[in-house]
Image (cartoon, rainbow, N blue to C red):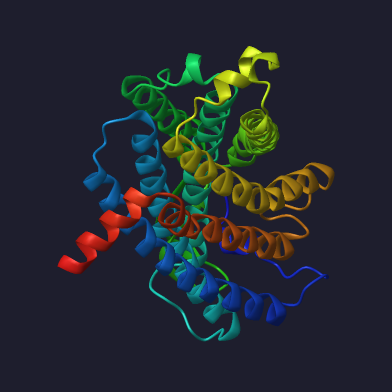
Length: 341
């Protein structure tokens, strides 16, 4: 079996143990506060979407996105709490908790990565769906049916779980001896093959999916912006008959659809801002193999990972304000049922 996991946590030359602990305490506290706000917003979103009626594909997709973000925030908070206890042990060597917090934070962190991939794919799907409705509204207006959207969402979650099952199979939490603390307690065990499994999963999914989704979302936003601009120019033109047929089709977008497009554009734009650090860190991992868990730059790697988690939690917190601002029905129903309670 692999050694006790806390033995891999050695302070690198780049950042001291004290700097590492203080930085982690601050970022973890920020995540807990932000995750609490995000969980509240997503619970409100889920409740409101249910009241709106899950009777079309896009509403169901927004509902599942809110539910997925809620799950992400729950595990992000659990990881951050584990980080707080872990840092407390580092700053106070005589303090020992009954369960190794470092093992818990690694476990919860992997769950966060798994759930966040679903958020990435669902957000990309929303951008693609709205982009198609702008470009070819007649062809795609009714293409995203409830059955198709549900099937896609089930596939996304199934793929996320299947992708990470081998990694979770190579790690477990059970009682073992900690030579650094000289205690026996539940802690994280890592299989000797875990690094190979992680490298395969990272190469196939963690590197390609964030990068591909970012490129797709950028292209969709550019196409939506150009399509709406051309449609606006068309409406202001007095010579409609001279315009191409696809522009006249764009004019058929309803006010409700335009609000949904604005909603998707805001969510997608914020996703780009928060996903870029993940893409950048993945590229850096590819360039420097020691920039990983247990590597020479372990502490710096952990600081960047939790900072990335903070940004991803921020991304989950923006959904409710966007829905509230861009969806009149959502805003009205939120006011109605909040007054009743």
